[in-house]
Image 1 (cartoon, rainbow, N blue to C red):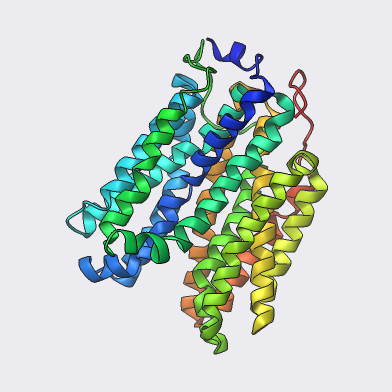
Image 2 (image 1 turned 180 degrees about the horizontal axis):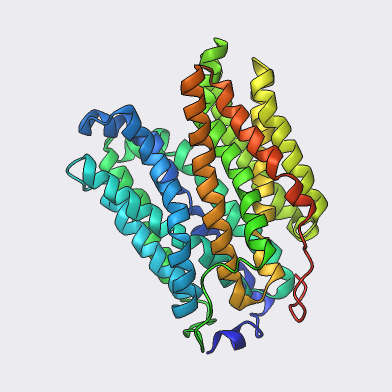
Length: 400
């Protein structure tokens, strides 16, 4: 069936639950393979002799690949459709993720990590592009919230369950843990073909490069960079900030609440998605609160530090969902993957580079707070873009 026809014949409500489950499971695999690496890093380092830089690269390299793989994902969507792209991307992700458990040395470990990150990057634009093919227009915001809930739950699962639950089940083998987390994704990829929707390739080739004449490409991308750089940046420098305050003992509690806040954000959005998505005032509010929470980690100490970090993580998570959910609502189904890919390309490039720039400044000055100040400065600089977002739907596109 041609995709333009599929987009106009949505499934009956009774079929929403299985589609929601598939979207949620795919969302989980946007983050589990990325966030399992930091948990297993001490075991990997002990066997392969990783330096601190390479240990950090286990997490930062996939984040960089999230930007690099956005355009190939958009190209695949325009040629083979979003469902086929998502399934292919999940297979690529599994090859890289499970491959990490089979590598003989550091260099192949990094190659496998890059392949895994590339697969996850292709998944990202495929999911929003799939929503208009699978869901009724008034379910688009909820569909975005569902797979983003899976993604943020994946962060918590990968970081929180691996060591206490999975490792004892696999005799404390980091290699077996990598494989155990990865292989079930193949079942999810196969299950994507169960809904009798969007089975064919696109009836015509469509544009796949970012439309730089569309202001949404740059504006949403830069605002995604605001959310991502604050979340990943504070996560990266949290230990150094607490150590500088002489309160490194608070790191376990801070990390717990920091990651739990992302789950809370996703649950809030599951409830409020239809009412909140597409409202510019909420995007502005969450961006301002994110900046305030990040500033609090520089200005406050002790438990107030934890409160500030938790606030930032929660509102940045809500902001992320509000932004990622926009393309399916604002442009035609054929343009959704293209716009999302452009947004992710810009957003994750900044989420990687802004904290890196801040780290270089902090190394130069010897003060970790300068790394966070760099991230805040970028956020304040791009905040006015939130006031200029045109969230009117394209003429002829159904309201979501």
